[in-house]
Length: 351
Ligand code: NAD
Ligand code: DAU
Picture 1 (tube, rainbow, N blue to C red):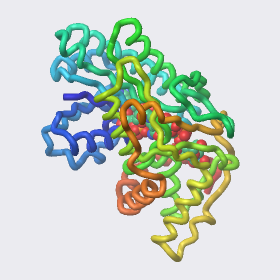
Picture 2: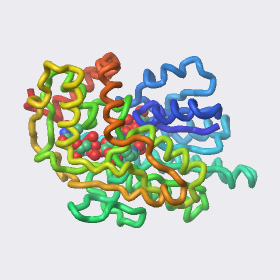
Picture 3: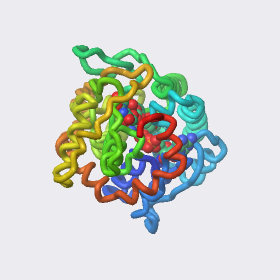
């Protein structure tokens, strides 16, 4: 079996659902259930004995050690993290706690477990750390896309905490021989993404007739990947990646934010022909330290592991909008008091 951390979050729940749709190998899902964790994402697995959910913290070494001893997984996929850049700007402490200290404690428990495995199990074991392109910092308009050799230059408390975790993972390979793999992926979108991130926030606000808050001039560029393509890339790296190596994952889909928001408005207007969603677009104060451009060069994973994304942005965004339009109750359920507090804090003054 495999152990997935953060499997009740956006990418994690897509990964668990995708994994069990393709394989009967059991998944232990360790998730703290922070505001971003949602077991409803996994309700289709509630009677499925292949999915074992455990509420807990990757930073709780004794709980992790006990899980490893009990279930003896052949691999750990580490997705658990604090993931929202704006929240890291308002309060970095949780990011340091989970992304740095939590990853450290998870590595410690994993190392202790792995050291005692017999030789074949030791050789087959993998610790796959899911990271982000944000560790590479910001590109100017004409700079080439990030390769795996690009220097680390994180700019936000979030990306600095992820960069730190990447360095720890690398060190556990270099120093102790732990068979680690690291993936650095671009912006994901798709079902179950918490409506604090650009695409689901814009869809949810538009459906409620609320302003669509575009930071600054909206010309910041992100490289978008449909979430199930990220899941298939993680599976490929787990199967064929070389321990100690890192793999960039991206969809060759660079787009300025304003274009994303306009596309969402246009597609929603196909479903609601009498509505004018474009008029809701509102430019607001920029994110402090806002990275201008990310772009992933995914040649290595394509060449070495024969992975390609299955969705284009045109197909992925339609699927995503369709999902949010048809799952408005899911959105309403996560828009709790705590969500409103966040919206009031980050978008103060926007009515
Ligand atoms: P998310 O915020 O939607 O989910 C994170 C999950 O981790 C939640 O279920 C949460 O409850 C859980 N969690 C948080 N702290 C924990 C802890 N201490 N112990 C156990 N569980 C904990 O995040 P996401 O967007 O699904 O991102 C998942 C991973 O992928 C993160 O490591 C993130 O850095 C990385 N990543 C995300 C993107 C993206 O565009 N969303 C892109 C590249 C990489
Ligand atoms: O690049 C990978 C990263 O992508 C992941 O590591 C992070 O976990 C994930 O959150 C994401 O980070 P971003 O900061 O790029 O994503 P977000 O959806 O928050 O913002 C995307 C862009 O849209 C960014 O340039 C900021 C802008 N934006 C965002 C919000 C929430 C707005 O203009 N308005 C908004 O209200």
